[in-house]
Image 1 (cartoon, rainbow, N blue to C red):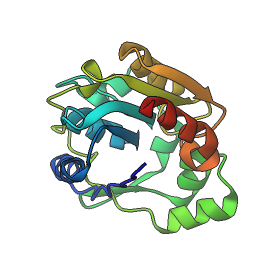
Image 2 (image 1 turned 90 degrees about the vertical axis):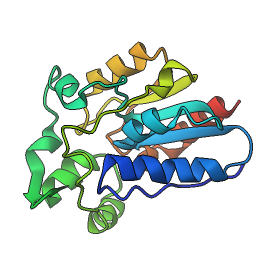
Image 3 (image 1 turned 90 degrees about the horizontal axis):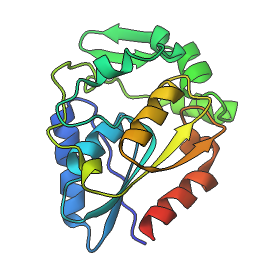
Image 4 (image 1 turned 135 degrees about the horizontal axis):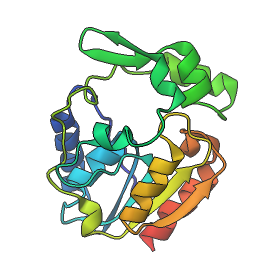
Length: 195
C-alpha cells in the first residue's frame, strides 16, 4: 500500500481541507482516508473525493453537513483536556499538564514529552464558522475506533458519532492517542477498511 500523511496546518479548516484534497488528487486507485481528532472533521469534508472508498475515524470528530460540532460536543460532559487549553492571540494549545495527562494519557511518558514538544498552536478549531458542507460518511463506508479512556473527546460522543454513521466500530482501552499507544489495533482497523 502507498501511504501519504497529510500535515494539517491548523491555521484554518479550509486550508486543511485543501491540503487533504491535494493529497487525494495524487493518490492512484482506491484510497482509505484515515483521520484522528480534529482531522475527522477534515476527512468528513474532503472524503467525498472520488478516490476515497472508505473512511476511518480514530477518536475523531465526525460532524454532519452544516452541523455545529461545538454545540454537539456540549451535549456531552466536557472532557478534562479542555480545562488545559491556553489561548495566545488567535491560537490555542494545551498546557503541559493537560497534554500529558489528558491528551496523551496512556502514551509512554518519554514519547508523550516528545509529542508535547512538537505540539502545533491551533487556530483551525477556534472558528465557530468552520463547518462541513459534506458528510462523506453518508456516502462512504466508515470505520470508527472509540478510545474508551479518552480525556480529550468524550467517549460517549465518539460512540454517538460512530453509531450515527453506522460505522464498523471497535473500542480500544486507550486515551485520545490510541494510534500511538495501540498502533496494532488501529492498523488492523485501517486494513479492514482497505479490504
